[in-house]
Image (cartoon, rainbow, N blue to C red; front, side):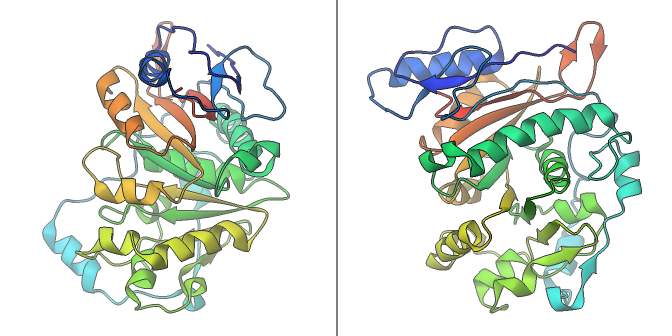
Amino acid sequence: MNSIHKAFKKGRGKPKPQKSLIGRVMASKAAKTAAESNPASQEVANTQADSNTPNTVVQAASTGAPNSAAPSSGDPADAKAQEHAPLPVSSEVVFHIDTDALKRKGMVSHDDDKATPTMTNEYRAIKHKILYNAFGPASDMLTHSNMVMISSTGPNEGKTFTAVNLALSVASEKDKTVLLVDADVLKPSVSKLLGIQPAKGLIDYLEGDVHDIADVIYTTDIPTLRLLPAGALHHLSNELLASDKMAALAEELASRYPDRLIIFDCPPLLGVIETITMSKFMGQAMIVVEQSKTSLSNVDEAVSLLNRDMAMGFIINKATYGNYSQYGYGYGYGKNAMD
């Protein structure tokens, strides 16, 4: 396995030039912001993380699973049916997660390390960095440190696959719980990937059709995993996500349970205003980057749209090592990682 372990430390210096896609973006961003003073910024340094700052790991994992959730049919009739179909609420439903089906897709297992051992181990490494930023000493440097958005520069780069795998990995923790939010309100995919039925969710609550957010946070037969679906399609989704009600909800979700990580599967960053709107509520962001496809300029543009005070990371999808081409994930992490 080809692994690179680096850490972030406080300081103003520019990151060392790197040949990788992420490294070049970091260097590019540093050149643009070198004149700015930010005491919380960090620099890619060495293999040992400062115990008081967010840290980093870059890993790779093999899997035969697709690099994204099951795509939408694209049929307008399907979207219309979803918009008007009566949707259940939390009090009526406990979602069954078919873990055997997920294992067959090569996804992380929350209770069986032998199912997909490489993938499970790689997400374990990524998860621990996120949990450290969310609940460790570094959390004091972030607002809503336990709220993590998963996005990409464009479609079909694997963000939903990543969000679900990360949630399943966190669900295996003994002293943490996880809430997985399908925030891709234009093309919700979490329910499709998990094989569960559509239900009322985030948009229904923001619109006022559901009065208590607890009514759309669903339990599952994985005890430590909760789901908040996207809900019904709505033509004013961006306005709803930008509302004071959403701001109050973000504050409530971030503070309601001290042991809960909230993962948001968001739309792509470029060309989707809803993602930028959602990002202002987040403490951490991970951008899925497809190796040999995602352009440096797109990554740079996507990063420029995010709040500089967030902890920011990258997941490299479809990584190639040696003579083998495989689905994989690399992860660079640290507050203001682009400085």
